[in-house]
Amino acid sequence: MNVRSLLLARSVPINCSRQKNDFEDLIHPESREPNIPSYAERKEENADVKRARLTYQSRKRGMLENGLLLSTFAKRYLNTFDDKQLQLYDQLINLPSNDWDIFYWATGVKPTPPEFNNEVMDLLKKHVQNEDRQSRIMQPNL
Image (cartoon, rainbow, N blue to C red; front, side, top):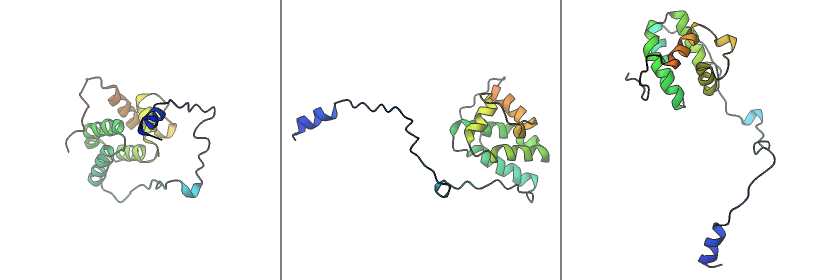
């Protein structure tokens, strides 16, 4: 096969339409799924240490949307939260295993489950609305 016929062969479109879902064949035996550590409440933390940890966790989400959303929320509210509110926020950002769930609840795309529907989630939903039109294209400075 010469170079010309190889180039022509590469330009031929290939129809890859499958009738079934491409993900049906994926099997994830429990032993092969990634291990997500279960949430363990840190009762020994004082409020300052908890605020520092939650600030860090709010910034390092793994998805930009939540990193921006939660870091600006944490900057605005964490210093005013009492122990109960800190605990609710800790549970909100650490119990769900999927960050998209938090994003969808906060933006109102999906209904918030009862266990996360509380005063902190209400503040987060209000923060998402951005009524004062703050620029939130970068995480706040530490």
